[in-house]
Structures are given as structure tokens and as C-alpha cells.
Image (cartoon, rainbow, N blue to C red):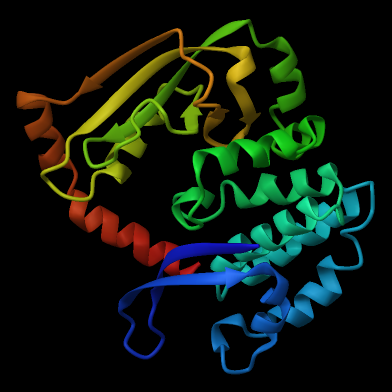
Length: 271
């Protein structure tokens, strides 16, 4: 299986941001991360063989998930992109029948929210591919591992009404206003994401409110109250609101969106 990722990295010699696009074959990924000519991978293969491979075939995912989190934090120190590459490697493993839907759910639960903008901003995926990934994951496992000490996602999913309201922060610089996957239950989150989605003063931040059916919920995450919404299920109602006039001028006085975007990319690249 081939996949492409796009990332912004920090050049270790100059300290400057550098955009990179790579196409990778999952069948040769282990050889790739073992290649000494690719210093960004460091000892990734050693970590993979020690922390991940021995546990990925287990039907019970607790040990795997614990080791996977340890690996994520270790990889995050020098190359966050490894998280996404590993997720695609494991997606190929799932498709080949070599790992269970529970193990795949554990991988997806971490990879989906990793980095500054999440998985889709790094790996180039179609809408159909993302839907398939969530539908393939064991739902109970995915919700369990996406919970927090304060919020049980399985209990929340069971308690959801047949229709619910979700929110999304966007800007005129993106082309999937109401068809994106990432929404939230928390009304305080969208304007923060609208700010992140504005990368120049020409772009206008916006706030979308939608009424969806429960059947459209592909996943729930305690962090940021995220609701992963299936764009293939028609929404019952959508309201869009973009800043205009004095509100827009006030927004630009308060936020330097170009500097904010650069800071976010730089911080993402250093993780």
C-alpha cells in the first residue's frame, strides 16, 4: 500500500521551516526507518521492535496501547511524522488481516489527534479512506481509549440522543466547511480552530453549527470534545456565521494570524 504525507519540519542545520512531501510504500517501511541515510528516523526501528511488534498481535489491547503511548512520546521528541507513518503501516497490516480491529482502534485513537492539526493534515487521505478507517476500528475500543479520567466516551455515546448539535471552526481558506470530519461538542472550541485555520489576513474566520443524526458519529474524543462526523450522512441543519465588519477588524487587531500560523507550525515541527 502506498501513501503520501506532507509535513513541515525544522531544518536542523538552519533552524528554518522546511516543507516536505513523501510517498511511502508500507511493504518497505521497516527497511526505510532502518536506513542510516535517513537520520530523522534515529533508532525508530529498534523502538518498533522492542515496544510495538511483540504486542500488536494480541487480541487484548491494553499492553499494546500502553507501549504504543510510550512509543508515541518517544518518537514525538525527534520526528512526529513517525506516528502517522506507523498508523499507515498498521492500516496496511489490518487490511491484510494481520492485526485485529481492536489493535487498529488503538492506533487510530492516538494518530487521529496527533500533531498540531491531526492526522488528515499530514497524511493525504480521501474522505472514503477516513470513513473506512473509523468504520473498521472496533467502536468500543476506540471510544474507551479516547476517554479521559473525567469522561467515558462509551457512556457518552450510549447516552447521545438521536439528533445532536455540533460545532466547527473554519475559515474561507478551506474548502470543506460543513463536510469536514472534525467537529466539537464544546461551543468554546470553534473560534480557536477558526483562528488556526486562518493563515492570512485575506481569510475570514467562521463558525458552523450543525444538527446531525447519531448514526453520523464515527468517533468521540474527550480531548477538545471532538466529534468525528461522517460527511456521507446528510446533516439535518447547518448554520454558517463568518465575521464581518467591526467584528472582523477586532479579530485581526487581536490575532496576528500569519504569525500565529508560523508559531503553530514551528511548535508542531519541534515536537
